[in-house]
Image (cartoon, rainbow over all chains, first blue to last red; front, top):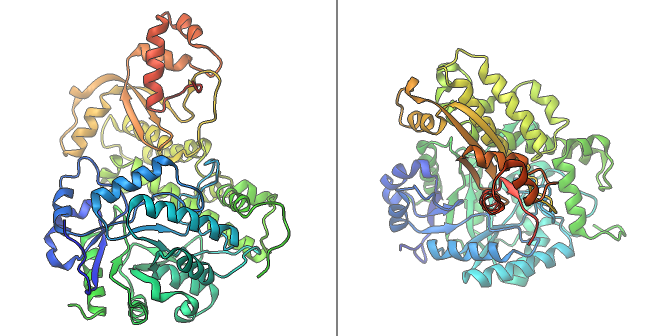
Length: 271
Length: 251
């Protein structure tokens, strides 16, 4: 199986099964593919994809605010056996209740407190040991805040990475949104984040949302502002190995994926 | 940033926030003890509506995918209902992931898609199929424990007079649908705890067992009502429980 080469930045995208043929035809343009879902049993293209392209585990393995069940850990191990990913990704999120009675079905950050930090650290170690691969963790933006936090998002993440040795999967649209809703410039918002731990960057577009009455993440091409931010981070992230266009939707077109990857490569001077 | 004194764990507080966001009625009553300033509560309300609209748009698109093949011909697709004015009322009342909300949104979609020039005589049956599928896809509530066998919360059994499984195959391969596909079929729609959705054709005897499994009757009582041997009823209950159509008491 192919792997992401050491010492060279890889630019890739998410695997969208309905675009498998176009992704295969794109050849060297797509450096890697992140897998948000396991391949369907009738996905005839997946074996060719796996033979040609390095794959990254970016599935929902479980929320690390709670201990993962034996079934979830077993599933994570099986996915890693199938993909042989250089690192396995999870999120700083807590989206369903402990009794599973309610779920938000969408990324949602935990409270930034000592208790949650301990929970995430303990459960992340178990997941990492189970899959036998490095674990990277993705930042998740909030849209509102509670008068309960004991630390900032940046401090929570820095302490987590220092304590566990995990890598940082930095989602730039998430940062851009968090900064936007905090009334800050993205570079200022990133000031205290541990950029030296960043292994992978995610780039994507943002669009106006009618309910939020403001921007939110969208499966569209990354604007120049996000690409400029990516370059700014890359200059401060010596461990960076991959940049991924983060869009996964049945409505996504091949043109959007390929143009986004090309634009990202251009921004990094790789074309 | 300091933490106010409280006996509640942070994890428990996070659960309250999740319930608050998922349940529009809780937000309306403002009964939850969540430390939100008025400004942040307004933002949380927006986020709750955003989550619900996104959730139902996604489930509608996935469930009504065969009627969507006619979107350009009829000028409509199911997920458009979440952007209609009438959906605003729903957003102020819904409990995201509840069976009641799934039934309500499914009916909105069917009503919306019925009032068009119908592509064929089978159209309303196709929509009924997709509606039953949607109810499985959009219901996320776990099954409570039970002392006697009972039907799965979202499971639906429906009789069709068109051969729906065959119609779906023809729609997928862009073939015409003729009267040769008129056939009575009995389909059971269900969802497992892990979220896997099943649509299976069942025999009338199995439907009879399923219908009489109400959470109060024992296996022997069900067997007596449907006039089948206890062993046969036990086997049917076991098979239906594996696809989430029934919940059995713990062994």
